[in-house]
Amino acid sequence: MSGVDIPQLRREEAVLFDFSNRRAAQKRRFGGEFFPAQGAVDTVGTVFLEFFQYDKDTGERKGIIAIDLRSLR
Amino acid sequence: MIRNERQYRITNSQAGNFRNALEQLRGRRVASSNSAEYLRWKTQYDAIRSQLKDLEEDLREYESLQEAGSTTIEIDSFDDLPQALIQARIAAGMTQKHLAEKLGIKEQQIQRYEASDYAGVGLDRIREICDALGITVHSSLSLSQR
Image (cartoon, rainbow over all chains, first blue to last red; front, side):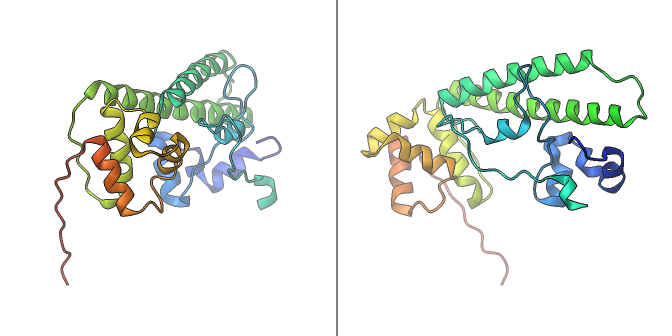
């Protein structure tokens, strides 16, 4: 989320910041879920994007979509 | 949903990592609750906590299915059938490999079936899988009003 105007984003789409109930509100509105792609999920610096790309069967990266929010301005 | 021991081990380790990350984030809590910095911190915190909850629920579901042994799984819709087949296999204490051997196919094939929620798998194969798992189906179909 570096470079993203977070307060502005929150004013426009507060639902993106609602992580309650398995992100039910996000899924209702967008049919998908919002996670900060570059946010670290462990203490060695693995980020959400890598976490979701990890295929637990093969150990390889699988395709998921990451959207650069700055490109949507 | 966790489908096998490998996925269980990985999910367990990921949950541990998430807990450590949360702990570390708590130590870096941003004081001013009005700042953009705080919002950034809180988004990261809430996102990790939310995902950790998912991982923990997945772990619990897998553990309780394994403990269940023989069980009845009720489904309300045809769309729930693939998940029910996976749950039934785990409750039967059968690995993907074991099921594959019973059907005379490769373990990876079962992995693919389950990973895709049995998308595109023929009815005959579904029946074979039910037989191999020892599943008894009691179904009721309702016709919506014409």
